[in-house]
Length: 147
Image: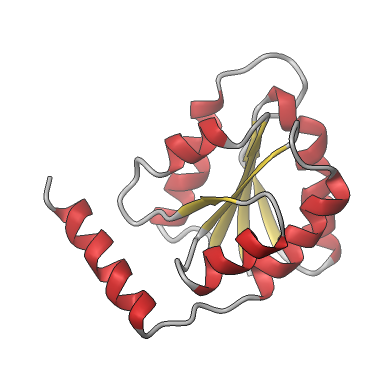
């Protein structure tokens, strides 16, 4: 699976750890930045990952910022993106099973790296449940199309 990953300065170190964790598990990872702890504007990197997912350049995305809130807001501006801010194993599993989330978002100042790795494992190994959940995704798609 090919994954795009991005972060802001607050999450640079966490991004590097999660990127390596994914590589060690055999994922192909496209790093969209940022590339240091120097202050940056998170929308640049949220946009880059969301566009990679929407355009089919990658299968899924991972975004990390201080809280995860900013990256969630940015990514979810793109039709077809279902970015889920996950902070524990339950939200990771539900975001995939119920919402078919295609971007995982986490907060580096909120979640320890060990928990992030657990979230990543669950998120990438949980399949979408379909059924009534697909009906809801179809409703979301209609909302996106109204513009």
